[in-house]
Image (cartoon, rainbow, N blue to C red; front, side, top):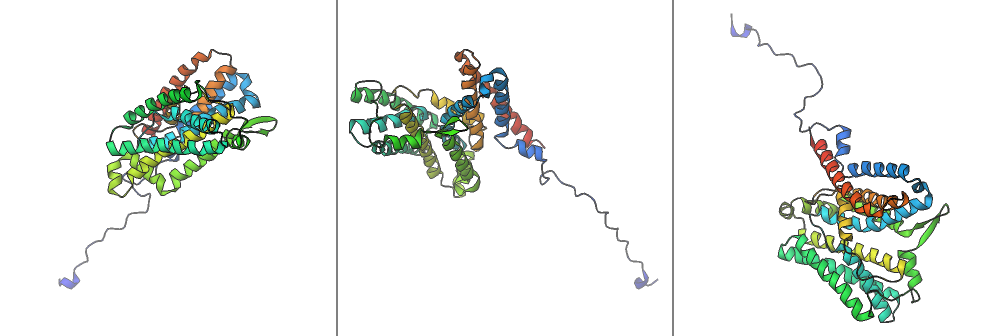
Length: 358
C-alpha cells in the first residue's frame, strides 16, 4: 500500500456544548454574597431591629414629634460620624473630634461677643481655627510617623485645657455670653439651627444637612479619584504611594474634613443654645468613632462606606431617645451602646467572612 493510500488519522469529535467550567476565580458570586460584601448591610439589619424593638417597647416612639427628636439626635452624631468614617477608611482616627466641636463654638462666640462684631466674623474665624486644627493633626502625623492615636490624644488634651482656661480668662466664667441679640445671629441660626414644619411636626435643619452630607460623601467615595485615594491610603499606603496616590495630601485633607465637620456641629450648638459650655465635648469622639465602626468601618482602614455610619448614628439616636420614651433609667444608655458596638462588630465580621467565602 502506498503512503498516499494510508488512512488519515482519526480526529476526535468536538465536545458537545455545555456550561463552561470555572476555576472559581472568575465565577460571578451570587447576588446574596455580593450584597453581604457591602459594609453597610450588617448595620442596616441592626438599625431595623433596634427600630422595631423600640416601636414595640416604647409606643411614644410612633408619634411624629418623637421620631423628629430621634432624627435630630441622630443627625448631630451623624454629621460628625461621616468625616470620622472617611478618616477611618483612610487608615486613621481622631480622638480630638469631640472637643474640637466645642473649640469651634467657643471661638465663634467669643470673637463675636468680646470684639462686638457681626457673628459671621466669628463663624469664619472658627472655620479657620477648625481647619487649622485638622491641618495640624494631619501634618504632625505625616511628618513624625506617629500613630494617629498619639497625635490626636495630644491634641485632645491641649484643646480640652485651652477650652476651659481661655474661656475662664476671657469671660470670667466656664460658659460664653449670650450672643442672640448680635448682628447676623438670625441669618446664622437659619442655616445652622433652624426648624421647618412637616405635617405639623417640627424637623431640625440638621437632619437635612446630615442626609445631604451623606449623599455627597457617598458620591466622593464611589465616583471620584479622591475616593480611590482614600481607600488606597487606608489599605496599604506604601503600595498606594508606589502607584502614584498622594498619600500625604489625602491624610491631611481627611483630618481637615474632620475639622470641617467639627466646625459645622459647633455652629449648630452655638446657634441652638446661644451660649457654649467650655467643658463639654469630652467623650463625644468615642460616640463618633463607634457610629463609624458600627457602620462597618474598620479601625485598620481601607474598608467602609458613608452610608453605614448614617445607620450607625440612627441606632445611637434611636437608643438614646428610645430609652427615655420607654421610661427606663437613662443610665442604661452607655450599656446599650456597648452591646450595640460589640454586636455590630461581630455581625460585620461574620458578614465579611461569609461574603468572601467561596
